[in-house]
Length: 217
Image (cartoon, rainbow, N blue to C red; front, side, top):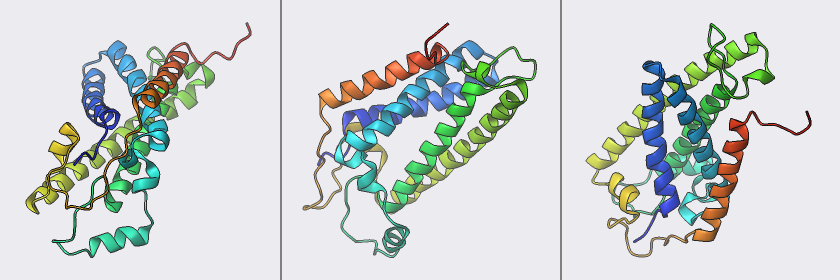
């Protein structure tokens, strides 16, 4: 049964690679690549946020963002309860936490200034030096939060694997062979929507790379 659409899967694995690449480029002083990686992450995040409203059913925030009571009820479910496609209520909260952490990290990176005032984000000219330094500090702190969330995500994957639930393969293939009959089938977002959303995300990324000009001299 198909549970993940292609745009969602491409975003997932692309952001995994970008987080690792961004860390490497910063640690090795490859700031040009770090800059490009950050802009690419911005484009991906804009795409994912928009796709969370108009994308496939399992990608939509309305499908997996449940109340705390629903999350608590999920924890009390028996091990042999019917499996459903998409994010469970706890997984939904982890997705939101990861997206927020990445938004903070990428957003502050746009305004960040290094201690020498040499390397800076494309929007750093909009803030003074002290504000740029605060943005840089939050940028580093947000990456620590991202690292913690990544570890928790891997622990959750391992936990479900021990309980006989495989989560990685469906995110690669888009299909889950472990779902019970009667589980909700994925409703795709459609190629046209994906192209439009990608065009918007690319346009915003390009605009930010130019320094987000608003016109005039």
